[in-house]
Image 1 (cartoon, rainbow, N blue to C red):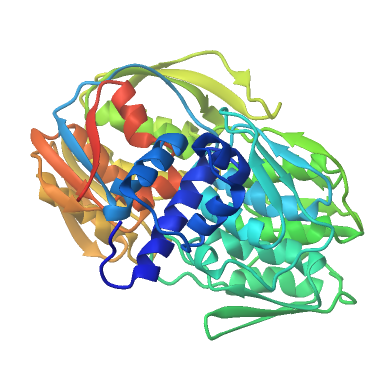
Image 2: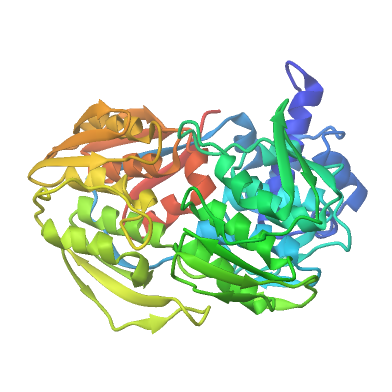
Length: 514
């Protein structure tokens, strides 16, 4: 194979792609070597970019890991959508992305084996697994169902942390809570990345962890942390922001503090509840789950083998509801976590949405309430009041963008106020390129006028996860062919979304520039 430009750079990029694809399939280097009839050391050289590769070998590797390595190396993934589409059939909601990443971080608290069931195989999870692996954690997919086994070493080694992977996810900031107890007195973490949603301060995290003796300075692209473990909370911790990840960091810090910690103004959102249930399985006492006051009785060491199943993702359930509404389709959405969708469904009912719901049943975690939803084609009208998010049990901040594309199908004007993020609302104006009428009033507010006659177009994928999916859903309803370019951000938060929508009848083709 002939390389142009920097040969080492291209071989390194292809090696990284092969490594990612191998890990995604749950294969070790030895197992991949056996499939290819070569040695583990050869696979190691390939993944490090130290091995010349023929096109034939690339094709064989691609077949072994079920990934188009040659095409992947050519550039980013794009989607071609032909519409308008009417969806039909049934689909199961996958487990929560945000719970999954929190539980991966929380697995650092446990010196024993953690088995997580049906974890979403998304890019955010892949990046965290790369970071965990660089700390010495052994993590492997144990079957095709998405079950993940995690075995931390006795001592974590942060000297070789995968900074490139860490910088591609915001979730790495949730390492602070566990590492407060598991790392040396001083340690470093790379700056977190993720969605481009404007400046989101880390100060609420630091305020939550300071009572445990953690001090953090941010310089030169790194968090420089020092822990004084003689300092322990002397009174209840009052969070200055009722944020999900802030609450999770405080919970994880409290889990290995062998006393009682009270956390006030805590988030009671779905991923926080899953983390609380997992901590209980580890033997940590957690009271007040589902409220804004959590009382945690920690342990000085956690070393247990634990098996936990995170619940289903209410944001994915909302994505599927929006897909059905925009395309005026009848579909069955199974395993929807109803307690985290009740406000959204009440708002949709006010707009004229018609649906059926089954009797409630319990998720695999034994706690979260699920239902099956059957959607019906509905003519919607704009709500009388503005749509805005609130901490749980209010309308979820991550579900707000879906109301933009839903409102675009409704008769009248809908006012949407995204007060949390600095500039996410701006990306909702991308719907105008498909025929929408979305007016940006300021960085936090948009006015949506409907109904819309959607028309296909070619767009770059917005850099924020939920607005990116909103654009894709509008393309399902658009006449003609649409192209959404550079869809990595969607893969960060959804497993095989295009393929799963196609299973309901959507005409979506994945392609890359060659």
